[in-house]
Image 1: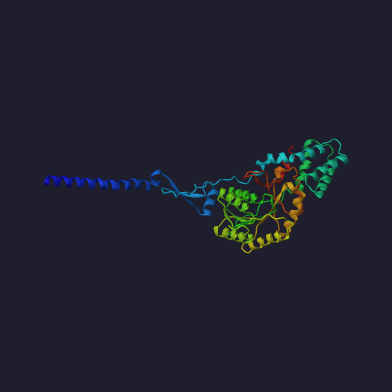
Image 2: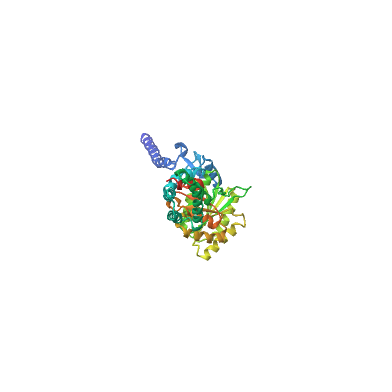
Length: 396
């Protein structure tokens, strides 16, 4: 009897042990799944967004990124990879590098002029052709007549004319009309703890928002820190476009999430944040507007006045499409009356043979062309250099 009792006790003990092992086995299998993201063992990293000012200064210096990484920390599920900031080239020498594009579009009328001036006989009919060629290039009536009169006088004095003499004569006249000695530098010097403020204006379709992004990129390439203000609140696409440009070079963008928000309030906040962040330059994009719409032009004046409650506006850049010719001049007149334009940006200059618009618009406004767009690439915005431009015109 005692043997049976001992046997029953042993069997019961085995059942208890087997049951316990069975119950504990699922927990053991689940535990590795709970610890699956063991990042420290696999070398994964966590990305944490850096403050805007720090990220941009690192990008401007060439070695930074838009985010910092913390080695060994467990990753957050769904977090996007760290943004790698682009390092734009400096603005100096860009127009020389892009000279070939300019020559392809401008050398047509330059070749015609050189050919006419090199003829053995320069009678009234030839001089009329020269005048017509200059006017067709959007030079304007008054500058054209001045150039022709000066050329006629010099040709009479010079007498014989070889190809080199003709080219030098025409080059001197074109440079004289453009103004080779004028100051075309952007006024963006960082004064103390205040950033320079650049206000970008223009009609729809001129490439104004793109120019804002390219200008910010150029300034970052020159080692400056930039904050962008998306005050074109009537077009969500424009705000998103500016955000994309800023993200590529680490430039913070101040924007409103509400479409149609007050542009002046966005501009005001952008300047305020620019002061707080200690950036070098604040660039404000404004809504493209028809120069014939009085209400919209008045609103543009309001944006400028609101900004000036905090800081003066250092530059008001009017963006014009070089292919629009005389219509661009009409736009320029109206904008200049509202916001005191300080400089002109001519976009799409590589897409037109009418480079004479540079002379015409400068004469119309009395302010210089400071920047030119010579392509669709991100680094195709260049400081305007008169001599490089004239050499490209006469390269044919």
